[in-house]
Length: 189
Image (cartoon, rainbow, N blue to C red; front, side, top):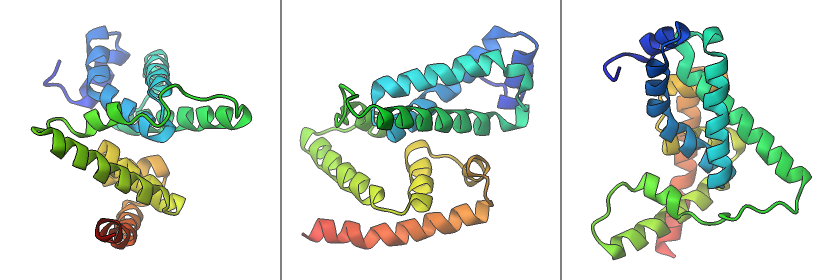
């Protein structure tokens, strides 16, 4: 199944092939989990979201356009993230146990580091980058996060946000231009 395209896997899944759907899950699970962790800042919430996305997709696989599988996953994950954040806002006493714990997220972003000091420096740099990204206007922040954390294509981001891919590229470049001076200032000071 690994040599099949997403389109072929969706069509096989729509025909009832569970191995094909399992391969889809294997391909997208880490990406959806990372996207959800980044947006909720909670591993538990991210795991719940990923599970909900894949269960929901399985239940509605016959209604999914095989050409838009990636967009479907990210749009569903985005909607679940929004719902969780709304629920947290309504219940301010809710606190995630891993809030502020970035070790697991960093492990996903940093697959291999040889030296402990390099790891510490890299974690500091990632934290500075996260803080600078959070200060961006929402329309820039969202695109930068999608590209940085999930490495989605311009087309995938455009489809999820329902905007032109050239607008996505333009906003991404503006976001980079806006954060670079701040990052340089953080490093100097």
